[in-house]
Image (cartoon, rainbow, N blue to C red):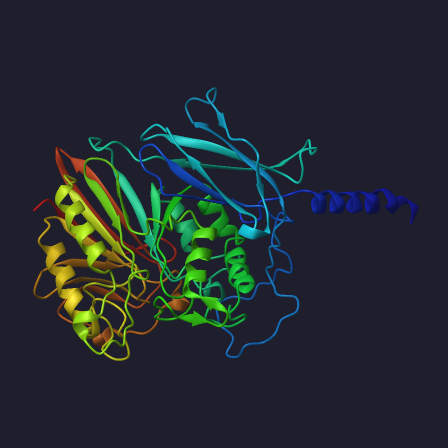
Length: 463
């Protein structure tokens, strides 16, 4: 027994040090990047990894079952955090923030707003966490990101798009396979079109703020997601399931969570700019991307008068019209959490512009976008991959499909219409590449399987 004493004491010491330190079990999320600024989100945790882990994945339980303790818990901890960042080619020019205190009010999260960055530059960063001022050995976490180039740059661009990533529908215990596959493309950024998680799916149903936060902490402790987001920035959009519940609109509740609570939590847990939910970002001479807001300005789906039903609302549509007209980008990509062209399933849906329920505003949006040359729609929300052309306006739309094959459902190949140029009931992701060859820019849309292989490719030159 005596010969094991040093080993036991070492384990006890390691345990004590772990519990007395602050860690980064949720890693970082880098977002809202432009040519000179970025936001870096992080959260301080009690442990370096989730606790009570299990390998349950691939299915939603048929019935809610009380679990004690809940698996994949990521307890937060009060403490202090700071960030140091520098251009990769200039390691001798670091910028270090002051220490910032975090506490339970914000679920131990903090956002660093980085400014005065250089365009088209890879930045390295290091975060440090400590429990108190006296700590001399803070925990660290490193990452990197790329800033956007100037509006005259002709550098090639590749970005990825995803949606619908249920925790219980991940295809590996460590998270969704697409995150490893997307990394192989070395994208400049990710556009996440919403349904980042599902409050209204079981084990547990998240009808309280603590359970909503638990679901955020749980999914972003998965190793594949954590590894991806430490090196690729992301523009987040929210949709119904990660606000409160299916087909949600302002004024509703889900258990004890109000719609406003849902907005607050989404902003708390991501770099998402709650005060500016719709925004546009320029990435070089040939690409500009618009990220639309599909929940904040929505009217109830069941309003009797179809002329009064809104998804984007008049103010957002006017902003889009003005900013499209002002843009001199070669290609314009409008990213929507929900479909604009579709076609959607014919029964049971009344929550997006492709549905008859919202045809009035949908027709207005499609007319606006089709009148803007070289404008393409990218959307999430639907659990199948597709490319389509609107029969009247000839507007192109690309649906990225869900994050895993097991999440693919709700449509069938028998429902294919003449508007579809591609349709596959599968999971995966979409990539978009814009590059110039001999002075001529091309935009290429590629639907990928979860392993990164190509399902469909369509390329477009300037019209």
